[in-house]
Length: 375
Ligand code: ZN
Ligand code: ZN
Image 1 (cartoon, rainbow, N blue to C red):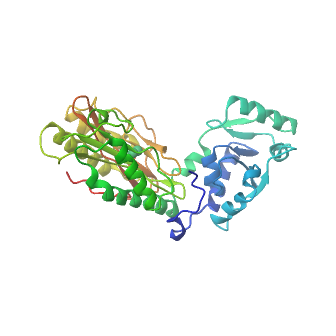
Image 2: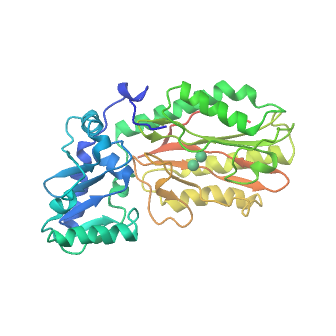
Image 3: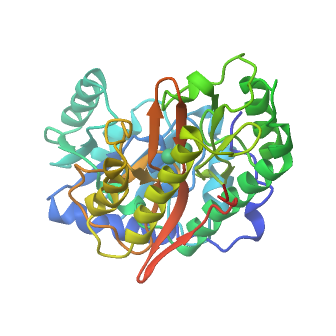
């Protein structure tokens, strides 16, 4: 399902500063000595122009931004670009012959390409077009637009928060279905349906409902097993508003938390998540947030059981910068939206993960996901 249709919740939300994004990108072109940048990552194209189609690229240089798209989007593209704000200065041209890129890149010496999104074959094709048009060899770039996307404006945060609120409400509406005999895939479908009813244009990623032995795998897919009393269940899901995603995990135990090793696992991972959340603030090295979570689990003898990084940025993509991991080199900044999601996966016992999507602020964080985490 395309999310190109107008969203239910998006219209009343604060405007996003789409026009300012091109202005923030251009200094990096100057810095790298690029005569132009061809944006081919479709999410980056959307971020810079508002275009939500599935095929198109955006040429950006000092003076102009030109969306090159095919005939399918001839009517749609102008509407979409206009709908994100009146200050987005993007021209739209259809693809065809002569190649619009050849015309745009004619005589431009250093044309930047996005190394993470073009194939080798595409580089060769584009290089041919550019040199035929009198330009020089293209230049590899990485992360120019992605780094801009890491810090969200108020309109973006409002959309992620709206998606998170839909996901919260979806879990409220299906929580009573998590009982003995319930089937993972049925409950995943129920969550997806509740999010769509709530106004989500899609699910943010493939919903995870993983119980018992399946829950002991961090990226389990919902299966057909019926849940039994005492199963630990991982529920990881999110909604989408105007392309912006939310991400939340709530774990629970069928029949109630009770006591014993499974109950202890729920509690200690929750404690690890609280430690991670408490570390989130503008300026903190992202690796410190990971360390805060990890040290609680290490202390509990669950270092090996926490087999993934602590979190990731969330926005137009479900996984984007910054990474919150032991190997991360950067520091968190106000306006970034990240997850904090420690987990522990123990064969024979099951899995537990707690995850919130939070906005980094000057004095800590604001959680955008809100479903209660009481045990
Ligand atoms: Zn998640
Ligand atoms: Zn996540």
